[in-house]
Amino acid sequence: MSIVGKKKILVLHGPNLNLLGKREKDIYGTFTLQALNEIIHREAEKISVTVECFQSNQEGTLIELIHESEGKYQGIIINPGAYTHYSIALRDALAGVEIPAIEVHLSNIHAREEFRRTSIISPVVLGQICGLGPQSYLLAMRALAGEYDIGIPLSTSFFPGPKTVRGIRGAIDVAANNKKEILEATTELLQKIIDENVVAREDISAVIFTLTRDLNAVFPAEAARQLGWTDVPLFCSVEVDVPGALPRCIRVLMLVYTSRKSQNVKHQYLKGATALREDIVTTEEVTS
Ligand code: DQA
Image (cartoon, rainbow, N blue to C red; front, side):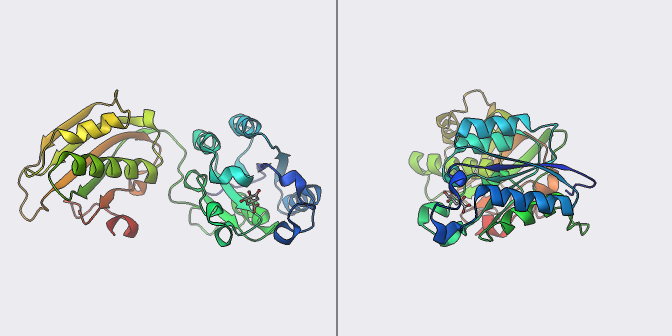
């Protein structure tokens, strides 16, 4: 999605970024937050966008700024600081507003300590730019402003718009027909489907399971209940014999309320399980 015309972009700096200039200078450089904001404003002027920058050390303040951004801004650039690595609340806030957001970092978080290599924010934003110092922000701003509009959407997974019910499919091979293996496999599959498609719990309308005859069909529903999905309608049945179908296979059709277009739904096929229908597109990662 590109944004055309003079747009308003919100820049959020997370905790400790007020210490820029005196904090770990070998990593973050010697420029201050004020200097960084000036660079951002200068760039905004050049590309004719309006930008507003805020810094907060408080998770709640950042969350509130995100909530209030709907209708006020057309894009968010966020450096969540250390919240990147553990704030589910910040992630939920970004997932809860329909504004394209880009996560930025001054340092290359993937080249630093192990705990910095995980961002729980990345799955709910358009993308992440890191390691380029202040230029991480500038590139994000140009991208959100549509400066690089080449006729290809910024992201294939971010489609704000009316929500509709879509089916997400998945299947997993189960090691053995026993309760433990079936519960574990079902949980893994359901979790992967919701993680990869960023599905909120309340957006799951129903889940339909089918199991091959060699598996006990009682347990998948139990796995869903154990995940706390007590109010999601579940239906479990035994698969009709399909020639060439894999043995010990659990299949799922999850009906979710989403703004994703059908071509952007990520069906999940795990542990060697494959789609019964050849037209179902899977990603490389999920088939491995
Ligand atoms: C940072 C990287 C984070 O890991 C760290 O906690 C920060 C800054 C960056 O911009 O490189 O505070 O977000």
